[in-house]
Image 1 (cartoon, rainbow, N blue to C red):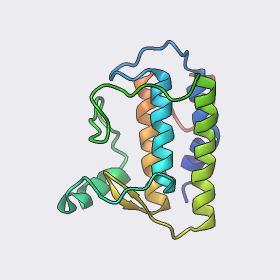
Image 2 (cartoon, one colour; image 1 turned 180 degrees about the horizontal axis):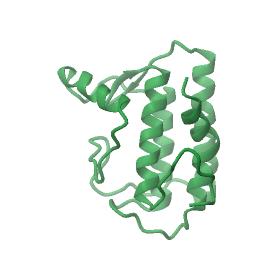
Image 3 (cartoon, rainbow, N blue to C red; image 1 turned 90 degrees about the vertical axis):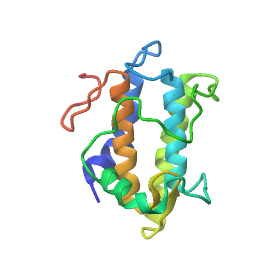
Length: 164
């Protein structure tokens, strides 16, 4: 298990996000900060299996290449299109950003609890296919860094929240 990525997701991600002023405009894309946080909530729900998918959108012959990218250190490109999302961001669900932060932490905790209870579990991601814990951890970490960067935060492992 990658302790740095686990520690980041469990203990630092929400702190970094909460340091971003809520009126910050993204450097790319159309999502507001709260929409992005709610988008991350959905990704943790997919990773934990709480949101289930029957079908994988990526053609089977392309899955190995997608999973190789996933496990690499290559970041997502700016404006990477997600075929699961509409062109315009969906409206927020939570009444405020604080409630979205609380729900995100709840889903992060749930993700780790699910895999602690069943370390051999595999969950289906509609883009990257069936993923074990390490693959989900890598995806969540890479995806979170992508969205932090979208809002002007560059995370380095030794940096403490609030020092950006």
